Image (cartoon, rainbow, N blue to C red):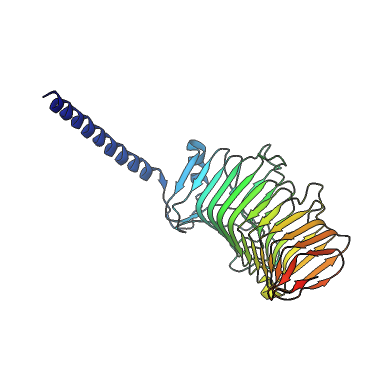
Length: 341
């Protein structure tokens, strides 16, 4: 008898708990629906409306459709999120404006961001998809950008500079795509400790310009750009970063520079990378290492005062044409198995 009573009481408690759970889920769905900021799908500028929500709540979720915004300045510790699948589209309407200007501890997720350029710009301008300006903000830390497609900006898809050279002054960018810009990623002076993962950068004038130190790229693809990856670090803290498991392909139809390194004095490592249909050009740099890479033959140009360029444990489709001095080949082979000495 007691066991039956206990069972009845237990079932009543369980039923009550399940009803509460369903009620909470329904309430959460209602709240989530109410918090979505909907598109009007017209050309009206929504910058101030979105900014007011961010100022109040620190977070805005944009619904399906297009949103016109220009130079939206996020406050610290805030988030802008779309619904994914390319269905939330932010676009600019003013020349020389950026779509979003990020601040410290900001997050961008699940957006498509479009500029005014309908084809790859032939000259550099002022518009950026995402701008991180360390000169105007005392401290910028821990910015996160995920699942974002950026296209059609005449300066850069993403441009960051002077955020600092401490590890917390960092950016994490992953699972993104940048196309149709003058420069895909423009990494300016003292924009350091960036972590770039699973990014497709294609059909830009230049895929990436890395002018700062301590930046690392993993599983990124630089393809069909006129120049794939360029470093022009003339600052004391430039270089000493890496590209791991990245692809550099089809630069300017196979005649352009897949990798161009100028004035990098503090070394840089390319590890387990694929480099096809494009040249490697290195000038006035020190400690540039290619390790365990696959290279599709092509030309390697070495100019100026280089100390040294190392290519080790790598394989070539055909015998490389190396012009200039300063290259050390170690344990390198052709696809046929023939050693390159």
